[in-house]
Amino acid sequence: MASLTPSMRQFSTCLRCVRPVPAANANGVPQRMLSSSASAREEVQTQPAADATPPPPPPPPQSAAVSDAEAPEYMQKWGKLDPEMVENKKQERRLLRREGVQPVGSRRRRAALRLSAIHKTEEIPFEQLPYQCFQEARKLLQEDRMEKLREIKNQQHRIQAIAASDASEQSKRDRIAHLKRHVEELVIQADINDPTVKRKFEDGQGDMNKPIYRYLAEKKWREFKRKVLEQRVTQLSLVPDLLGSLDLVADIDLSFGRKTVAPGDFVESYISEKLPTLHVQTFTPGEKLVTVAVVDADVPALEEDSFTTRCHFIASNIRISPSETSIPLQRIAEDDKKSADDKKIALPWIAPWAHKGAPYHRLAIVVLEQNEAKKFDVSKLSTIERNGFNLRNFVRSQKLQPLTATLFRTKWDETMAEVMERAGLKEEAKIEFKRKRVEPLPYKRRTERMR
Image (cartoon, rainbow, N blue to C red; front, side, top):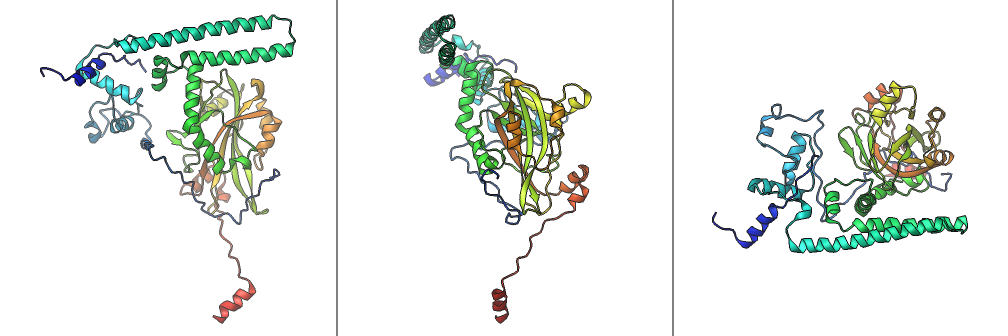
């Protein structure tokens, strides 16, 4: 190829400047009647947005990644798949299916890295891109950042001066709290326009201990994901059935093994037999101690023709922070069995179950912040009665603050009887709920005979 057109020449110049990727009821609520509840309730229908991209299908449950030698012949024909250079959905799905590895960074950058490798172009650090407009813009942003840093220093001096003044303690506390909030805003504004910060956040490499990345993550979460979670929690009536109110202030993801569960999804009984894993992303600095409670909100009460609740799991004194988000409940249960000290599980896990013919059960998973990060005595919590568990009273008595919640649903399926038998509920598995035929009124019976 002798020459390049101007547009192609500009694009090949951009390819030289790609930065290398680093390694990587009593409450006034109407009661729900058992006799008036359908045996198979309609599932929640969610209409995706018109311009929303459908998520890729989940990978098949495999215990480990498949090597090239062990992969089937049709998988070997896919060739080499580099996590840093796959650039379309088809290649991403194949990488996840065969290697069990997630792609690195954004798709746009992976495409640029692939073309850069093909042309063998020289890689230049992001901050040193040789474009005059880009460098002039960086100078303006740097000047703005320095101005914000000077303002932060001035505010810090004001805080020190107020703390050393002779004003009343209440006045000093109020003024210092106001100035600290202003300093936090300035810290975020100093970095919010930095292209390096934006690139790291887009590629999932931001440090959540820094205020700017927490701010960007919370903003992105509130734009869509929080709205979906709040919709499901409201639609399936966790509020007010279990809690009087719930302000979602932390992101939460639920998974059983490799199966990710969206809020409100049905989960097969053989999957939910084992403890799940939670990922709770907080957006406020510092560590927290939390309590995790799993409550079934739809336990049939035949004598009262209504429903009651049952507690399936309680664990306390679990430490989380903006950078430590994982709560592996299965591992916590195994650690509790090994050590007699520092136990976290108050009520061990009971597999969710439902009778044949009964309506679906809502299993709520609630994450509760412990007051002032004080540790609980797990032995005292272990005396809580599972049946008829009142989450409102539990939150009030232990002075807990709900951070976030999610839920899944379960109903009778092909494996439910085996799960109940392994849980020691063999007799319960034999019970089947059937609709009681309502006899017609006498005048209707006479009318039918006359016909």
